Image (cartoon, rainbow, N blue to C red; front, side, top):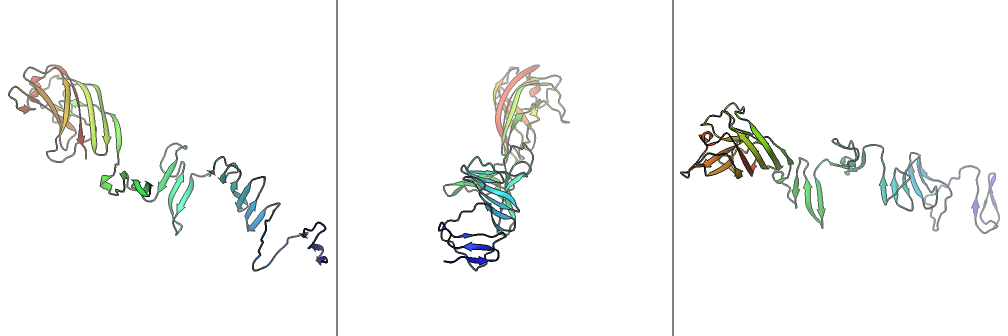
Length: 303
């Protein structure tokens, strides 16, 4: 077939080697409704698909995608990198800002975030932060196993009721005070050997080993231990029992000590059983020696 000349350059449909070649000193535009290519294409440089968009292979086993004349995705022999040219795992995402991944709904509104510092709250820049505008659900084997409620707390195995959510855990120490008068000030010194608490939801567990010095407390004063780490639920007649494991320094005639958490207060009431077998708290001051030890532990419901 004869050579065909267009302008100042030639299109060699059949070259000496049998491979057609097209040469142009400027851009080459192909205008057609469809361009069908049924074999492989080798591109020696960058392939531009539109304004600012590109596909290129800057090296062996490397494919890059770009927009706005900037590389955005790189695929090499080890993995896929988004906004990084050095992927070292199957998928590596790098972002100079705080939120790295956003999940949007069909209207384009962001509903969930995955990122580091700044996505929400405070903490270490090494923290991974997951944020949702609603609940966050976790599941396996096709069913929900745990739900983080948007209002706070965790529910389990498909339960969605806020009232059933586990929304608090805390542990620490507290300082018991004994024999407080009506004004709330201590009338005796209390040496705390050790007192701890653990709070799970509304359940508060306390343990304490204290030494109480009677001082000048009046004989008719009730024996109370206050300054609980959390106030007791105000439900009438809900007197949670606190077990007494050990005590010393009581006068003759006291056979048993027992402790109850008082509703709608922050105190425990210490009662005793005397020789008559009846329990009381009034006048216990006269049955105490100058000082005594008491070890107790138990659980009560807070508000």
